[in-house]
Image (cartoon, rainbow, N blue to C red):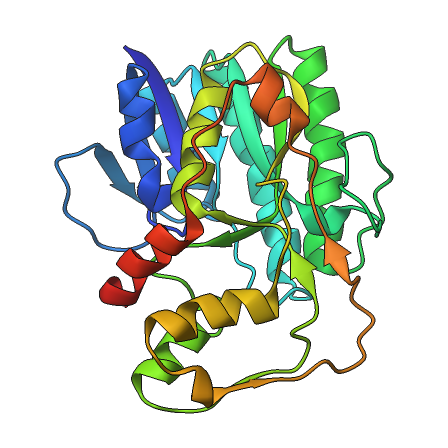
Length: 288
């Protein structure tokens, strides 16, 4: 079997990724900071910012593939992004040293400049915070480093994601949890349209990319915009609590639409398993 190390295995996307990887004959070694018990994959509790622990993990496993999901995005301008940038490069060094063949690093749609159309992988970048700046730095350096070491490199720019076990401050759990407690839900910029994709679908797409011959930058997105107003109404109607919504349309510097072009994902990777948003929301309302 093909060995793959996945960082952030217990994160928003990582929690869904073991099964699609295993269906493609990968032996999954998941790295995380929390305490979990599972028979579904090999779990390694470690801190990716600990250089000694990370070196030991890569020396021991000698994986052919690396999927780097782990990142802390609670504060977009925190010093932690510099630390994770350095840790990511060190991880890549140990991966290559131990015979690695292909790496998939996760980028973000916030690296891009703003456009009033679907954003393509060839469009200009214009990162506006430390999170997206260090992600972009990581892409530039890692891509060059992999090229010089004959390693396949993929940079997957993920757009907006929703799923279970999200940070309670994110919009999806904020809406559900407030409605469950019969509290008002206030959305100040409900006119904004974003490209949302279920985290389980994102995980499947990443698994397919890992198993493919694709190299370079690729968008992980739905290719369909949905406004925050529409998103909130879908949830509220299912819970019969539309009366608790306060949908404002205040001015903001954010783009009115942030949409990805998913042509590469669909046509080059062959991903076409987009879940129905209403079906997923039904399940997640029960799980929250």
